[in-house]
Amino acid sequence: MKIMKCLAPALFLSFFAMTPASALPASPAAGLDTVTASNLVQVQHRGRHHARPPVRHHRPPAYRPGGRYSTAPRGYRRYGARPHDWRARRCVMVGPVWFCP
Image (tube, rainbow, N blue to C red; front, side, top):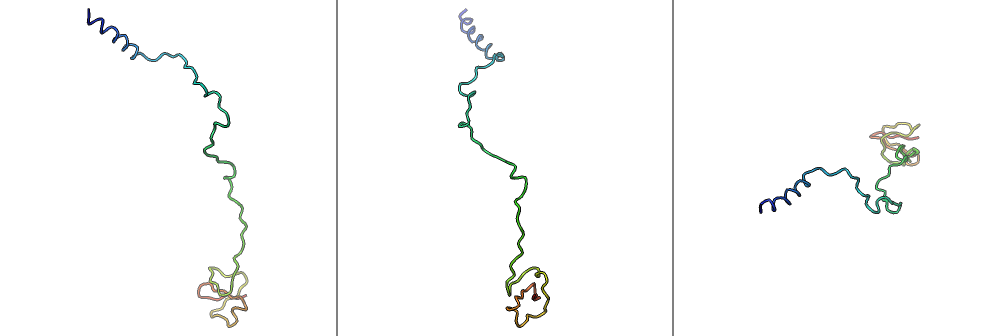
């Protein structure tokens, strides 16, 4: 009988611990229903401004006399050797070739 007195409360508690929880709705936590704008923090924003790249106007390079370039300016004539008045004529080098207007 003494064993039954000790086991009865233990069996009673273990029965409730092993049974599934009841489906009663939990009471809402205080303060979670009233969210204001001051409580919110915006973490990431991806707006429509990412849809198109910015418009960049192409400006032709300013060719300087004696400078080395990858392409000749439009309308320049080709010379194998550097002309004697290359500075006055604004000649530029493209590789080993000289171009003058």
